[in-house]
Image (cartoon, rainbow, N blue to C red; front, side, top):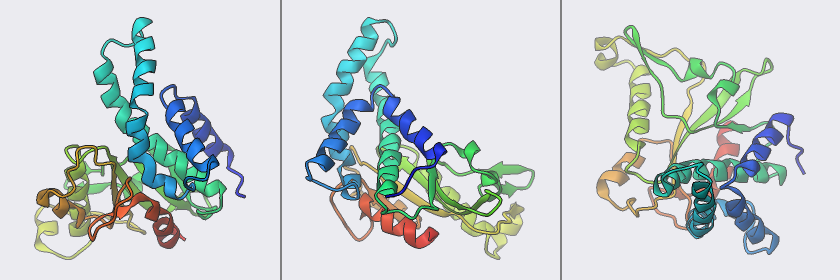
Length: 251
């Protein structure tokens, strides 16, 4: 079994200490401990567990409201949904790494400042201005000097109504910036990188939007798109497949 680094252990402990994550993480732990699923296929249970955990999280929020710590439970739930998805993803990634499913030299973070030289591969210059991607998760390898080497930029969304469009537009801009074309010259686009990032998208699809033709079209612009459910189609993969994808692309 893999031994987490000090930084990875810090990340795991931070997620476990987040008040609304405990009932959610307990459900993952119970599934695995009772052999109803493995850590690998737990990725496909995120949607189901987030929905099942809503009552428990609401109880915690009621207590916080009684103490005057929050004012609006509905607003708090909306904020928690996105953060819980990100926390679940990182938690399961690290659990899979411990199990040996993910190569030991592949790292994960939601904190861009923790990744040395990340800005160098995530900044496109347009004249005197810059454009940067929508980043929720960075999965990466390091060079000998601990600076970033290969990386996957992952945008996580609870629904497609959110910022999915921002991510694929940056992906298009990145491709314009790295090919010889008149648009690049017209807008003075510059993007000098040693290693292009891989751009991926993952959703829990709370509102069942993936079959909307307009939304399906967006997925074609990503290097890979995933859904945190036990379904598979020709345009989106179950989230458990990210383990093989990460090992293949960053290995």
